[in-house]
Length: 417
Ligand SMILES: O=C(O)CCC(=O)C(=O)O
Image (cartoon, rainbow, N blue to C red; front, side):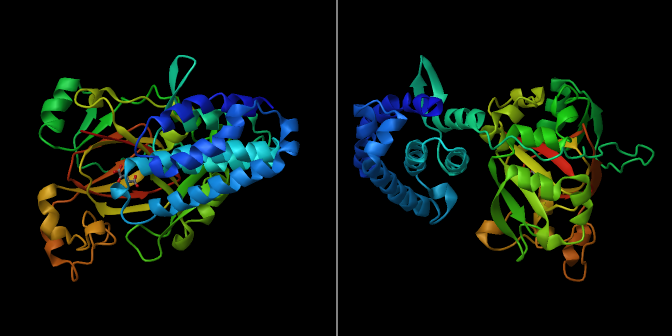
C-alpha cells in the first residue's frame, strides 16, 4: 500500500523529535510504545491480519491520548493553550492516521476519515516540521497532500455546478467615502495611509491573482478542496445569541450555500446563514494559496502576514468591530457594504463590556442605527463604501468596521504589522 509506505517514512524523524524533547514527557511513552511495532518491522498489509490485535490495541491507546489532549485544547481560552500541547495533538493525529490506515487496510472510506483527522490536526494542532529527504516539511500538510492524492472517493460523480455570476452592474456608481487610489506607489501608500492610519480603497493591485478567474466556479473549489473539513459560523452574526460554529465538508458548504440556487434560497433565513469566516484556509489548503499573492504594500513592514478567508452567501454580517493590526481586505468575487469609524469614536460606539467581545459594538445593525438606544453614535463620523470584485480596502489598526455581503462573496484579508 503506497500511502502507508509514504507515511511510514516519516516515523523515524517524528520519533527522533519526540525523544529529544522534554516537554512531551507525558505523552512520550505512549508515542514511543505505539511506534515500536511499526519501527521494528516493516509493515505490509498482510502483517496486519496476523498482528491485528496489537494494531487495534495501539489505535485505541492513541485514541485515548488524542481525546485527552483534544479536551485540554477545548478548556480555557485558546491563546492560553501551551504550544507543546498543540504539538502533541499534531503528533497524535499523525499516529492516529497511520494506525487507521493500517487497521483499515487502505479502504477508501478510511482514507476519507484520515483526511478528516488530518484537518482537525491542522486546525487545532501546531506545525511540526520533520526532516525528509534533506528538506524540512510540515508533517500534517504533507500527510494530507499524500492522502488527498490517493483519495478516490473525492472524485465527484455529481453533475457540475453552475458558476456564480460575478459581473457587477457598473452603471450604479458605488458609494465610497474613503480615498480611491489606483496602484499607488509604496511610498505614497506608506506616508499617506499606513503612517497616518488613514483607510483607502486600492484598485489595480490584485488583477494578476488567478483566484479572480477561478474561485467563482464552485467546481474549481470543490476539486481543490471538496473533501476537506472547514469551520463555518452559523447564524446572523457572531455577537448574536443564535450564533454557533460547525465543522463541515467544504463541498457540502459550497453546494448548500454558494451555488446560484442556494445563494438566493438562504437569504431569508438568517439562522441558517453559514459563513466560512476568518479561517486560515490557505495554510490548510496550499493549492488555493497558489491562486493569490501577498500585495507588495505589506512587505514594506511585515513579511509574514496572517491570511484569512471569508467565504459566504449574500447577507453574511461581520458586526461593527476593531482588530489590532493593519488589514488589506481583498475582494475576489461578490461585493460588500462596509461602514468604517475611526478609533477615537470607541466611547460612542458602545463596545460590549465582556472582555471576549470588547472589540465589538453593541450596535447590531450599523446600517440603521437605533439612536434612541445608542444616542452617542450620532457624534460618530462614519465612512461608507462598497467593496467590489478586484478592489482592496486598507483598514488601519483600531478602525471600526461593519461588513455585510451584498451577494455571494469571497474575500481574503491580510493582517499585518
Ligand atoms: O469580510 C468580513 O466579513 C469581515 C472582514 C474583517 O473583519 C477583517 O478582515 O478583519
